[in-house]
Length: 145
Image 1: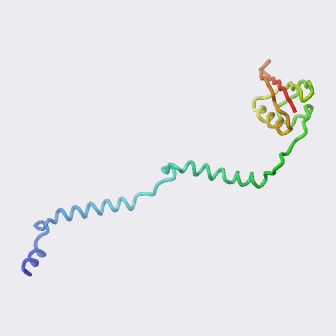
Image 2: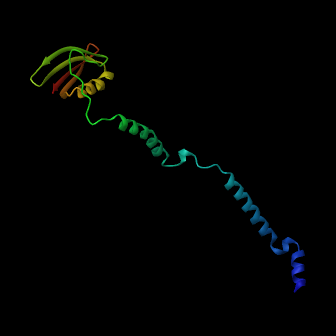
């Protein structure tokens, strides 16, 4: 019996299936090398990375808003003669019982700021029109308090 094991151990690898074992070990080593040396997943490969980045951008804004927010809104005084919005010029003011009508010359970029200022003054816009006349944008705004 010992003679069989001695012959088997001293026999050439080819006769013991050595090519199969050697090729399997070589393939396993190569695959293991490439698997270990591959770079980790990049952030853009992760499907949730964009959502995570948006959340990280929003959180400081949320914290800043909570620290500065108060329960009472800050109201401004409404005066059609002193509109604090740049690129807005008063043409006419027609007062009524609970508001009135503003006729203005404006630039497109100033329209959102004008509506924001009117809201902070407690004025509600019930109707408005925009039209261009001689390359000047004119705006008519119906207001109620």
